[in-house]
Length: 316
Image 1 (spheres, one colour):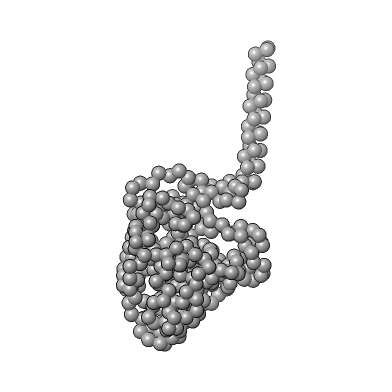
Image 2 (tube, helix red, strand yellow):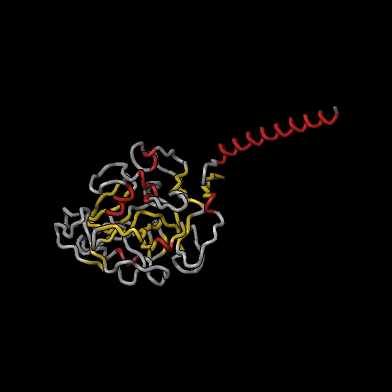
């Protein structure tokens, strides 16, 4: 009888513990945001499945362990981060933790671009945009990935305050001959080279002219990075640049990190692509309307590096 009573008590205790553990897990799930590969703890978005992954030798990029955040400081009901539903003071989380074996627009990576063996999540954060777009063949190359840096640069260093003209001559058919000099050099980002350089310049409809002149090739002399094309943005975000649609970049929020999307003191950034119907305008990414717009080439905006990476060199 005594043995049966002890067994009954033990069963009750075990059931109680399971119930407490279930409640506890439910509580943690709600308070820490536990869901699949993501845990939100103390305001940080942690990619659980990406933690502690051993990176094989030769891999340039690995998936991010923690996603970047910015505070939404805007209040407008239509534009900026507040126009997408973010409340003032709320954290904006940029990019995705990703799914093993897949590459999707916005997947966050840390890339050892300077070759020091460290994948620095603060200064070496990139986002997968799309397959590499070859501006000569006008086709996507599925062997290579295009990744965009999380910030603008000044003399190759991360800087969201500095801004530069695309071309101070205010002509859009020569390429970014003023702004490109700020891109990281092959000595700064020694682990990288551009896939095709010089590069054929294109407008937003894939043509090689603007109303000002013919778009030839542009040489990113001694640079490890280039500017992003609107063709890559179209592919990544499912849009058509030139539609001027407010909110068209809501599916690509990662492109708006370190812009006026979150803070009115920050800048838009230039793409490589000129506007076909004008002699002065170049396409740029803006956080105000959350769209790709165009402005005079002489205006000072951000210079944001895009890199070309062989997919076999990415741990994903």
